Figure 1 (cartoon, rainbow, N blue to C red):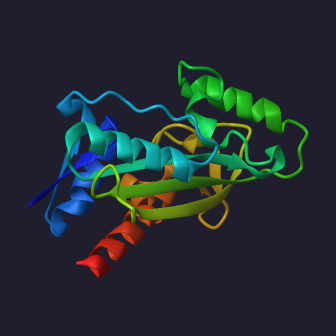
Figure 2 (cartoon, rainbow, N blue to C red):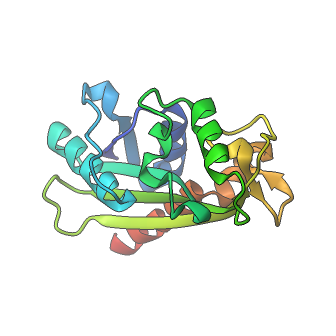
Length: 196
């Protein structure tokens, strides 16, 4: 079984990645368990930030590393909050404050379209010249009022017209099948299988 460092300490992400990568003989280890601090995310794109995080974790551990960078992009706001989704309302990374700021920014806008983005990067080592890179989108609309108890972040406001539900109303298993992160993981697994 090959060990893989996950450049995240988010418990939900760790569980998701461990379950999906176990059949491919990967043991996923969160970077925090190895004493690796979070990487800087200075870039303006999801892919660049994910690549920086993966290279950082690989350099610190000496092992292959997987990183994701994700967020929400509102069409009427030229893609904001984008890579700043977690810190949209400040460094505290407060979901309530972030959602409040997004709803205020969209006030009076007729276009409520938005999409989640997930960029996944897998490097075999810190200088890997051919990192596996996947980027996916999940489309919906932003509501003014929160609906649903599941999920996190912007999920209670992210409405899926084809399902007539928000992401926070979906069962976690259903969400993982259709979400930006679920799509990206499946595509990454396809790429991994094609390389072996």
